[in-house]
Length: 159
Image 1 (tube, rainbow, N blue to C red):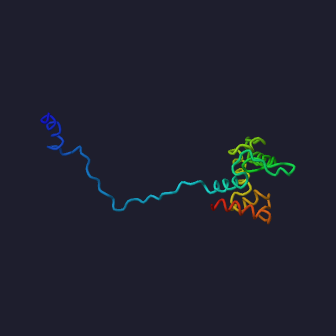
Image 2 (tube, rainbow, N blue to C red; image 1 turned 90 degrees about the horizontal axis):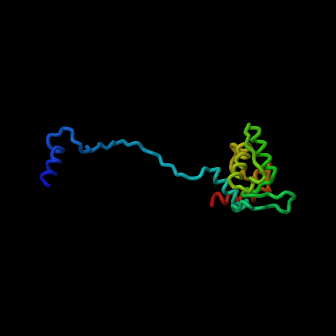
């Protein structure tokens, strides 16, 4: 057995100019540096999550402003007018997609409606302007009534 194994392996070491054994590789003294990037949510998703927490603590069935004629509902607490605004924006953009009032109780669709509103009205706005307008309407960023809301959102963003 030993003889046959030796005879089998012998051609690998004797008289073979091209050895099948792997040759040591040279190490490049100047290796390419690869930048690593942390995989974390995009910044706008951080804002959306903070808004959801402040508005409803994530409860898709939350109903707020019961004292008003029209209550706000869902994770982002919006009224029917926001669904209408999103549908109007979609129509302007030439999309056939439309939302219903029932979609306010769906987290994914609520976020989608928010993003349609945000991208149309605030494509380059900072988080404070977006949050304060979400809370106080088109001129919410100017209203002192939205400062407390922004502080809650900012606290969640930084926490």
